[in-house]
Image (tube, rainbow, N blue to C red):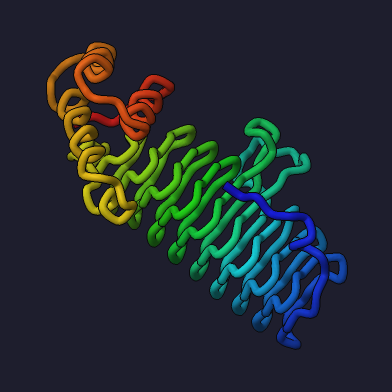
Length: 271
């Protein structure tokens, strides 16, 4: 998640197109670049070397880390699309080295969700993606074109959300999971899984994601055994959890999978 030293956001020399409107109270780091017709509000902080394209709007109490790329038309930090929002102070915090593509919309938090939306580092948010109020997005997350995340959603590190996916409020998406395009997600997505459908179902491990993350063959086999019991045995989830705990050799990934399911309040997707 985001962890930025305060000195990162000291004011520096930035490069701005003459048509851009930058409030003098905004804090822009060294070598920030601002494209034509972009508008930046007074409470925005941008880390060094971040590049902001044309026709973008950055407003609200928004913090953006270093070395990010923000493309044409992105709207970052506009007030939450929540009828309960009453103008209270809230924040949007974005980490380092993120790529935020064309017309992405990102909203800050609300009082009911802790007042903060957080996006980690090294993420890719593709064109027209939307992240609503009070979401917590981990590191190395990919959100594909036109995917929409409602409020209060947790997306753990390395997860992939496919294009045109809609995710219900308060859903959690587990580490290194992948959700296929056009899916409707109303329950939690288990870590390390491949899920797709309307509604979404589990189809097995995310083998390609595990390979790219450098997960060992031994760990993948332990996860495979756990998945067979949890999602293919026909056992109720409480009994399946007990059986995995007893029959499968434990490792950090299996323990995370079991704890993720145990902590679910909406239930998890199954086969």
